[in-house]
Image (tube, rainbow, N blue to C red; front, top):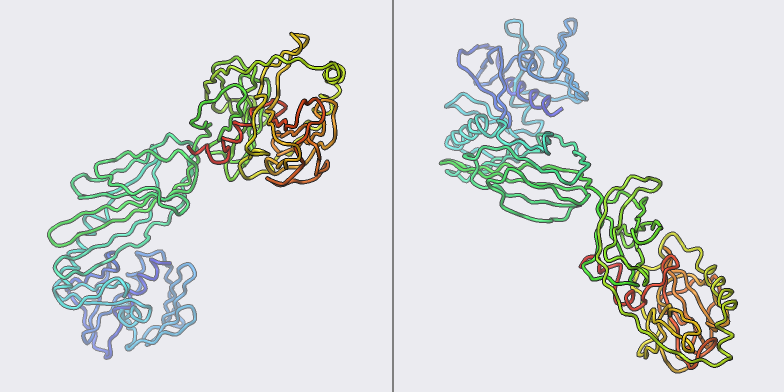
Length: 557
């Protein structure tokens, strides 16, 4: 369509004559349309200082189809969705049915139909200028530049020659590895002698995004070292500028390793004694990087919960296998991040844990990452308890209670309920028993690990929900007293024990910081306190680590 319009305008420029005195010329008349030279086999004719060109000769170099209706003596030109009907010896043409009037008639000369240029060119929004010194007709969009005098014409002729001989050639080309990449191109010249700005070949190349399936590639640039003074590169991702940098002499640039739609804008600057040019190349790349696992820059210990970010994920249909556990952990979308959360039980003896990524239902590993684990010295408590409490901790009662609690934690929502950081249910407490403290009861009569934190606080102190979730348990147990369990999704549960009062019921949706009960001393307790614990996939983790570490934000550190 664009080429067709170009040539149609060019051949029309030769029609604006008002009398019938034909005069062929031996002089070479050149036609340049926005920097493109149009080569005519049949010479133009000049009538009363008007120039006409042969219709067929002009269109032979285009993609248009030219037909001649001998009965009606009409030339018909068809190109894509544009149709022109041009009657011979007439002063008008029909463009898609719309009549365009000439100020002179088209002519038949030496068995060829000749048509005027200027009127149609200007009617369709183009400027036409005549350069006497080189017998050149310049046709260009009116908003490109204006020519005021002969000096302007001379300088513009130099620009066009320069453009034809240098810039229009394949001076710059781009490749991703060995595959060529298309780029849209725009050239702007600034003529030094008269400060004219001339813009050529705006968006000359239609771009098709080039998909990449790997992140270790390079964008290779081929250009002449002696031709460009400066090269600047701007990189945008999803419309936002990532970086601006000077890349002269660099011909191999690493591509970003994260997935997304990127735009690379290169400005190639060159300069000579009469003009300065800037060539702009725009490349759009839809990059899909390799999946990789990312860990926070924090030390991790036994009993911690490890958040793992999956970069370049196409979805969340992945699983993470942890070397210290015979279990697969799913990944989830949390605040626009695809991530998994894996517990490190307090009994883990491994010094290094390997996390391996798989697609769901696949045994083929994609990638892995290692994590160093720091050992912890857990507290040891020696307790002497009254006979009445021994019954509460008898193996039979303990097993019945554990079964109820496991059932309350057996099903968790696949997606997280929470979008904010976890919080402590009470403030300004005194820790009476720490996480995973080893309790030795009555000189070794039995021992057990403390699953959470005991926080001493006066009876009746309000207890807040640590985060959004759904209540899965809200009743009394033999050793835990009044107990509440809340599912926060993705296998994370919080548990609140020894409460004086319960304010929620099973199945109820609760919000972060909502009051769910009061501190008490029910069950296996010697004084008012809150037992607070947290687990992931039934592995107890340190609540203080989860409170201090924001799994939704601290991954960026």
